[in-house]
Length: 288
Image (cartoon, rainbow, N blue to C red; front, top):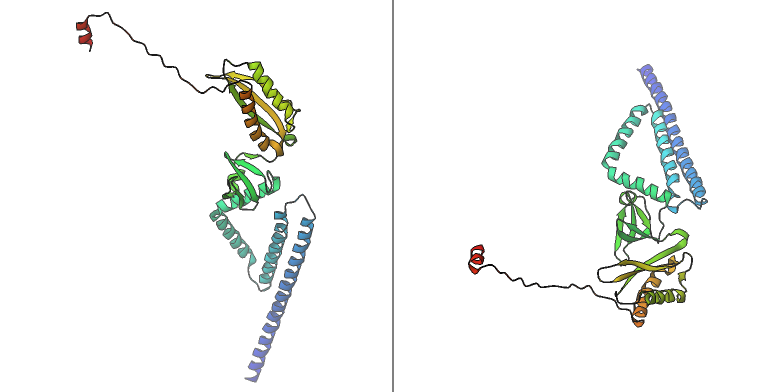
């Protein structure tokens, strides 16, 4: 009996020693993996912050990915110490990842589009952007959505996949930082065209916000149904464009009227014809 007890005690001691070492090794592995993942993430974060060309949204992402990857490998190493078949576990995780990816297909497309937006930077915070014919002012960029607001005030949340999948027109970024103003002024057919052109050219010469390069273009554009249409095309600095446009509309209208030009209204002439018939009355009655 004593001999059997000693054998059991010896076997128990062997198991405890073996598993105890595994437990200690697992704890050490977890602690070391945790510390290494934190230090590596911190190093990557600092390196990303030193790169001014990389968007601030990206600064913490590589560090977090590295940290999670190290922790996963650490967990797999710990399970391997206890004899767990990690190959099947990795396959299970892969299958689970595939299922989650299919379930979140729309969300992942937003993430992919968000990465492309943050990488290529077609616009930045504060820019006015036209998407699908609607103008938005961008307030923040994200991996899933971009937050903005309409020029008149209401907030808008735009999924990234809808932004990246269409033509993006950035109204806040222009070639050489200048913008063009196109207006048409219609004068009556009885008005003096040369006088109207002289009035508009005088306004251009007196407006300091209008650029001379590219040169202004003031020419007769077309002969409309009710008016002679004059094209008024000038360039301004991008920051002056909107105010200059609004001021010019009023000034040009007032100057043309003061110079004797008129703005014709759409009109329609109606002609009434009375037809007489020489046919006999009885024939007309039969036709009726």
